[in-house]
Amino acid sequence: MADWTGAGRTTAEIYLTMAERELHKVSPSYEALCRAVADSAQVCALLDQLPTPKRQPNLLLGAVRFLDGPVDTPARFLDFVRSQWGTVADVMLTHRTQTNEPGRCATLLPLLATLDQPVALLEVGASAGLCLYPDRYAYRYTTNGQEHLLGDSSVSFACAVTGPVPLPNRLPEVVWRAGLDLNPLYVDRDEDRRWLASLIWPEQTDRVARLNHAADLVAADPPRLVVGDLLTDLPALADEAPIEATLVVFHSAVLAYLDQDQRNRFTDVMHELQAKRDVHWISNEAPGIVEGTDIEPTPLGRFVVARNQVPVAVTAPHGQTLDWLIQSH
Ligand SMILES: C[S@@+](CC[C@H](N)C(=O)[O-])C[C@H]1O[C@@H](n2cnc3c(N)ncnc32)[C@H](O)[C@@H]1O
Image (cartoon, rainbow, N blue to C red):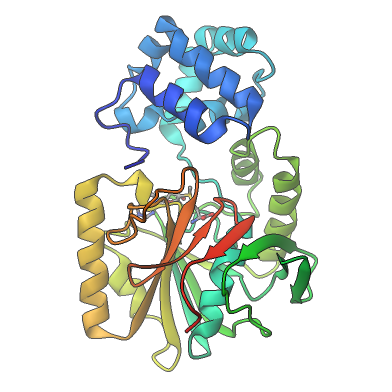
């Protein structure tokens, strides 16, 4: 089962797996860099000085970009990492992989629209909170050559859908939104914006524009972002949600950063919360990261959207596709 803790794998294996499974045909430049790191005993030895979860490829690649280092050729990249190791390591130790992809809202929206309105949204692992605004973006779903347009916004997401997806005709009504994160990022801080941009892979220029537009939109009406751990601080924040709204706790691309024991504990936290209040748990994670979502055949490089641990759809990681699995509710 994929995770980003790196547990049980050598640094070379971590980088090679990243090259083969995540970057191949998606980011040729980063694929070459990760293969080069895997082949460099010297750079692997430097990375081995860091705690295992800090050896993540996205963290190294983001750190070099943040420092305006070269990512165009493996030779120049490796040379920069070796010669600037102290600075690179410092950025890796003081930053987290916090890619915030608002396009993921396109994959959450159909499920949100099936719930009783209005909704209160609580995102765990919210990063800068860009996914807390599904009601403020516009969507262009395409299915069987037909377009389904929704919303009127300067920020628009395209999503190709298959299956009996219940495409909504109305945006959700969000009356409360809050995010919980170990280290929230703030879109009105230049350094945080620069870090968010550094985490986007070089070939994905459309994502940079999307990030900037969504960040401007969110900066105009910032969300409540709380510093905290999803294992300990969720119930207190959930208590703040208005009782008359349908409470949705959701997360995307977060639980892969937890080890198996921590994921089990989070499942317990969610079950305890659901025993006290009607809470809808929506997850968008790699297959199997949430118990009950290990669908067969495992779709490589895809996420599974689940509602209360029941798989509903397979999605592309940045919200580009949505393949609905079940009959609409
Ligand atoms: C890859 S980002 C995903 C951000 C956002 N959910 C999205 O889909 O765009 C993962 C986020 O999870 C946060 N995170 C990781 N472990 C956490 C924990 N135990 N408690 C709270 N947040 C956590 C990180 O700080 C980071 O901001």
